[in-house]
Image 1 (tube, helix red, strand yellow):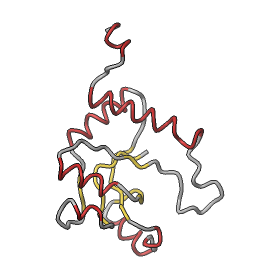
Image 2 (tube, rainbow, N blue to C red):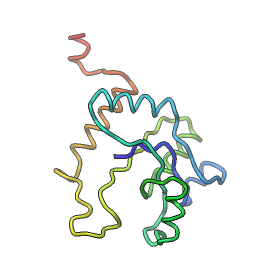
Image 3 (cartoon, rainbow, N blue to C red):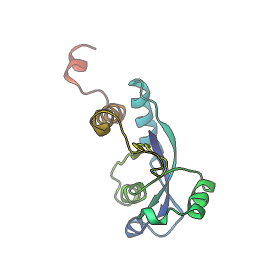
Image 4 (cartoon, one colour):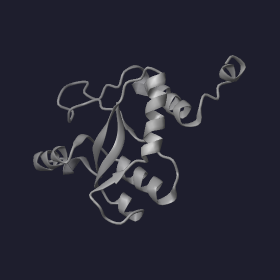
Length: 144
């Protein structure tokens, strides 16, 4: 799991929200709160940069090498647009990349685990929400 702190902009949607620039960054305070929630829940995530592209056919060896040289840990298709939206509107957005494959090179490469990773995604979302908004579960209020 990668907690995306920065996205290399290789698509067009982010440019609808912000002027052209190589990267768009996540809110540092929001990232810190998300990391706190993950740590409290015992969930490991690597913080880093991803490359957002709008089509898999753009993932050529040379473009992958360029993205890697720019610090990208993985390729995804949404983070730059979501982080640009967050920056432009002031809405809080946290992005993750659930890394499951290496360009679909082996059978089962996209396997995310039980329920296609839904349980893990819900655990991550709940931990981040607790980190950002505090622990609002009923038992937490009743049993300090």
